[in-house]
Image 1 (cartoon, rainbow, N blue to C red):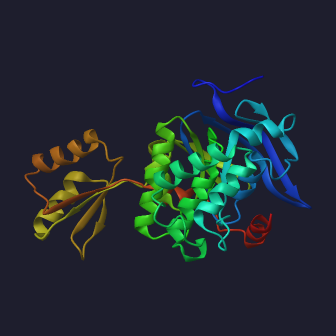
Image 2 (cartoon, rainbow, N blue to C red; image 1 turned 30 degrees about the horizontal axis):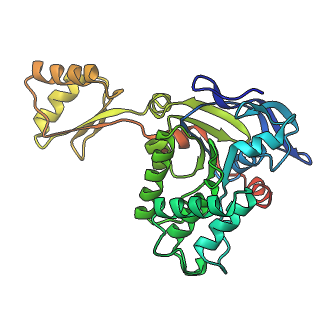
Image 3 (spheres, helix red, strand yellow; image 1 turned 180 degrees about the vertical axis):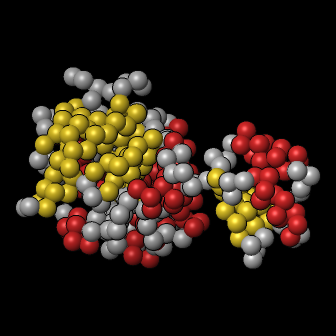
Length: 323
């Protein structure tokens, strides 16, 4: 039986395709997720992110593609894939009418754990996710952040080595979101592979080792956050002056600049590197000019997102949300 190792990808997809009727949702997706890493799939609403997660977690069947998860062929051995993974969807799957502890014990029963092992695992995970005090209370009384922590704790009952998190922090306040980030980092440090979909670009920047941008069913870019940022040629150095004569002298010395004569500012294209910044300063020194303020702007994932993706397809969004 094939399994993943530290050197083989935890998830691979080649030529993944999916359509509903005459609407193509995924149009030839290629992905490779290294073991023990965080992989983030970004894209606007309706891009197909949730469809990718549902296919890779065996909930939806692909129309085409060679797919492997945890070393198992998705088409040939979906049961082995399900045994290797955990899934936390966009919406909390906890039962609000029973307690947090009862939710955990129910999940332990579904994983066929013995009563003793189920209680031990439940106690450990409730403690790990800081839910001990709330364990005996109905989940309906939990905050949004507590419900998401419980949801993820339930996902971990079976000790999966690959976890799919579909927009896990949507609707959480900043503190709860940061707490969830800490939990994800802890999981990865223990060798777990996390496949994350998110609309929070800061989240991908903070967590992901590798990012893919999905738009209209196609991967339009892949790489680390830094690699993706370099795809957008929008970096610049901005110089502000209070002395009009210094402003004019700097404009002459620097030549290729964008002027704002009213604000007395100059903008120079730059990749933000130390070499380019030193070049700007050297030219100002040679002209005997000193700026009152210098700021460096380098593209962030917001710039990448808007440069690479188009407007959301509302029709596709509705299809994705109901499947």
